[in-house]
Image (cartoon, rainbow, N blue to C red; front, side):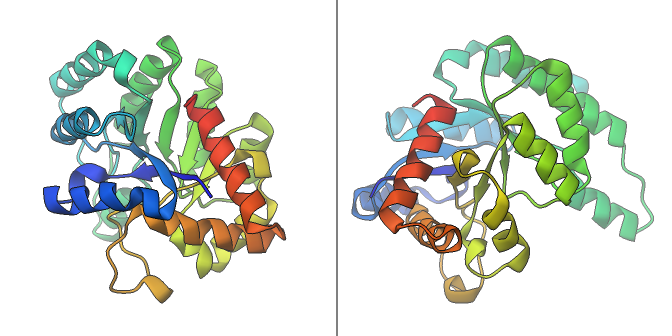
Length: 261
């Protein structure tokens, strides 16, 4: 069995933990890690890790939307930094729209500059389109429709919606457009995710952990590590009524095809 963790914040682990993670990958059958970034500092550490573990850590650079809007000059500098490294970059990400930040701000009566975040995302999508790089998206619920509009406007086909949740209309639209999604360990216990796993096209599905984000159920109290994609694979195989080996081959090949590995 071979699998790929297509979304992990590797830069957020300690150096000691990263060494352990890399050493244990062959034991779990995890071949590669798509390491996403949060901001400039995160990008710098992700770049360092990709150079330290070539062929294993595949770097993606971007600005995570669940943060305050950066200043225009900060965005310009990061985009220039990313473009200078575009040949080494597996994807643009993590980028998207701030669904959870918007909810938190609304609860306190604060206003969110939604257009500012849309404009920010648009700049990263332009970079991805210019260099034919896939984009890794944080876009859930109603934000998915806005992002789909932007993807279509830019003619971007390789879009990876990680840990997706959304309406049946959004799901249908994304599937029809050929956009990929990935499942985390919560596929074992979240009914909403399990329902999505039952209907989304098999050829558009991948595995991820979103580590170090923690999980519940049998994973409660455990550090999130890439080997958990094996549990994701087994759960997805059960939902789909597939042999685990066949499911793993599908998920692995989907990731390799999407990221051109």
